[in-house]
Image (cartoon, rainbow, N blue to C red; front, side, top):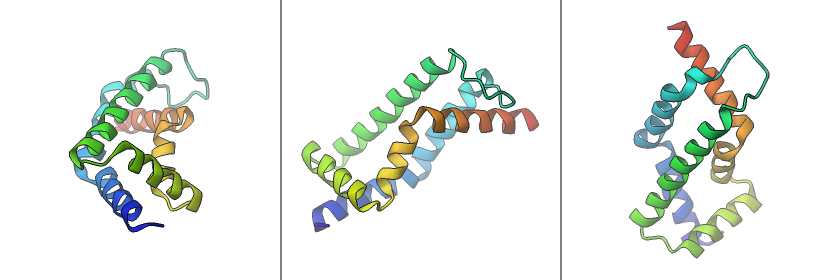
Length: 117
């Protein structure tokens, strides 16, 4: 892996696991988890618009990361592609956060946690 790609991925990894990003995910989940039934295996139609909103929020955060770090989009995509091919981990997190089933599972878990408080 090139040094430039390693630098992009290191910065992205740090960003994904810093408090502001994880706080954003948790805040979003807390604000929207009441719609999700943790005791049901059914994916309700109401889940999709919330998922779409999360994706928009997530994508705007990634765009902000790219802009803040002055990373050319082509370099970002190249680093992500190389990471995916090497199965290094950062790409796995990005993909998981964009998967509907993972999102629903996260929201149901948050709904259960909130209910138990």
